[in-house]
Image (cartoon, rainbow, N blue to C red; front, top):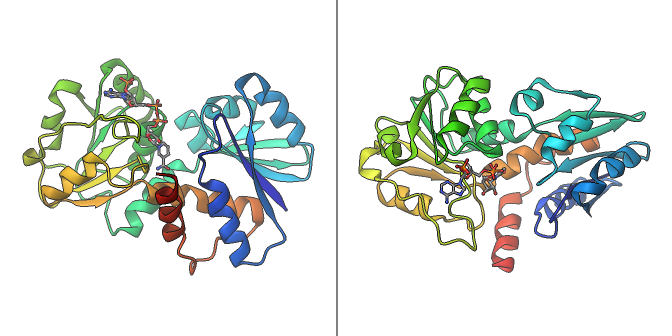
Amino acid sequence: MRAGVVGDPIAHSLSPRLMQRWIEALSLDADYQRFHISTDQFSTFIEEQARTDLSGLNVTLPHKAAALDLAHEATEAARAIGAVNLLTFKQGRIHGDNTDARGFLDSLHQAGADPQAGPALVLGAGGAARAIVYALQQAGAPEIRIANRSRASAETLAGVLAPEARIFDWDDRDAGLVDAALIVNATSLGLAGTDSNLQLDWSQAPRSGVAVDSVYKPLQTGFLRDAGIAGLKTIDGLGMLIGQAKPSFAAFFGCPPPEAVDIRALLVASLEASA
Ligand code: NDP
């Protein structure tokens, strides 16, 4: 059995390490490779691979929207989010799915956080935010709030996925913290290599709130550090990354990944080694 991940760039991807560890733990006769494919080669590459013995591919930036266009059929989640991060191949047919939303909910579940506990503020309106808003809507979050630098993108996202969502101007994002049970950073602010921070007034947030970052490099972002100092529980972005990989593994190799493997420790070590 063979599968892999395709993107541009791809050298930084943690997926091969994660998948290989699960393959080894189950002693599967399987392999998971990385493919560095540019935008202009993407559709030809996928159509060729779909005719080989490859079970499927994870898809990362910048190909997630193109992967949806190439799929012969796609799940409701993939169509709603407008992006595919999992392609599976069967007799030349290309099936698209999006497991980021499930990954986000899995990360909440693993940390004992309840998406129905109260209002959820999502900061951002890009690809990660779309998956997270979709997940929150599916999980029955009682109120969804969105704040994004470009208000128009927040309004478009809400129009497609969560018409009842409350939109906050970016300059007024602190108001979205009031009574929020979940506060999610789905922007790229805090990513390693940028010295950006969200600059939130955490005194507006309840101490019972949970702050979740989609960024996992670094693991301890300024967002999570400040939320922790204000007394909130924090969940880093590795939970979502591991959570989205679980259904991908099952789709490629026909069995769930082994629970007993401490995959988080492996990824933390990889991140530390590359820091
Ligand atoms: P996109 O490029 O689609 O979206 C980026 C978002 O960040 C937009 O909302 C953008 O706002 C906002 N943003 C960027 N720069 C600024 C700034 N200077 N000030 C305010 N807002 C800003 O990226 P993705 O949604 O794909 O990814 C976002 C983050 O989520 C990344 O760090 C990515 O690594 C992470 N991620 C993590 C996953 C995981 O499994 N843990 C899965 C997927 C993503 P605007 O619309 O105004 O430009």
